[in-house]
Image (cartoon, rainbow, N blue to C red):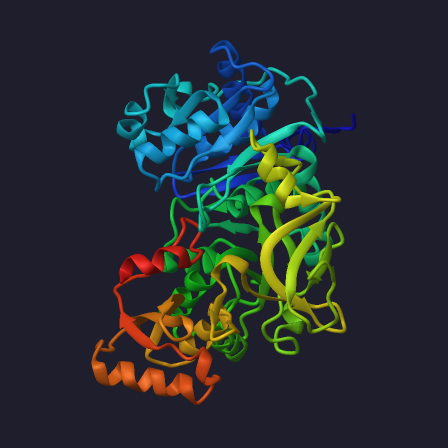
Length: 490
């Protein structure tokens, strides 16, 4: 068993007065955050939490949540972050599935927590924080690389979520792969607007401690607040999904981003070409990424310098990951679409309590992602779609993401989602759901115009058979489009 020093404890020893966490309600140094995490770990142990116990957290982004994230491994507990947007019945199922022995919650979710009486619970605020004069030395802490760190439930875009177990080593190697790709500057500050119960948000908190850089944490995404953090708080890196970045550009207008901002990591699905072009025109550095809960975040990332040379790509695999494209049981040729498979130290050892799902997903050391894509001759990865979202119309494959990209290129379209519906002749037919851009009226004339726009740019079998305007699209808490729920809008 290989060990590492506890990341936050080590950072507190090396850089005690450096800011670690910046929030609208206050700033914590590495020493201050470390003392808070130690205080919570002591309280958890007093509450009976023991090594291997699962501690669930139901809370919005906030400093107490960050302290709890760092505290759980110190008493050997496995963190189980819960999606605050879930219904009580869904939360109860996840608590039972992971076998949680304790539920931590914030004040805002006290009523929801009260409905989950099957698990002992305590408010994060009730755990308190160390007194201002706390100065007792903290013993050196170590983390075992193969120890479970967290159980994160998949976003549930298809079927019932599964709890992916992520080890300390999974998170460590994910952080190493990312920093070897992006580099690290003394002035780096990472903006966290993704929810901390999502692997993308959790990764930022852990990387802040590993890299020794401040995390600028927002309770929720607000485009104006995110832009203010970049302008006035020195944010250099932000993790976003496409719809977030689009809204930021709309608020920003023609005003350029400051020179110190070096990267918008863009995940949650393929980035629309229209968005990448808009960023290029304004000089906004964008790095499209591909990652999964099961790989502790990033698998591949496209450097901003390659964004226009390789439009639509999510880059080459990070040094911590291998990628294969498998079609009909063999390695696909360059340009040939197949299932994306990943191997490396960031890949989950499996799903909690689901040996059947683990065996189906991880075969001969390779994680079969269920995503479809291809690699070009230079090894750049292109994600086409999820296999479960594939539409087969008249024997032809229709990838919803490709159709959505064309829809999003129309100036009257703000958001787009495409799914397949049964068709008596073709088997399936694509149907589009569109959120109109600001100032646009959802009329039949506009629908006809957008459909004509598609027919000029897509093969006939790929064009939506119909288009429906909606006020919003179903998305996960991380902003990922839930195509499986689009049919409900019918």
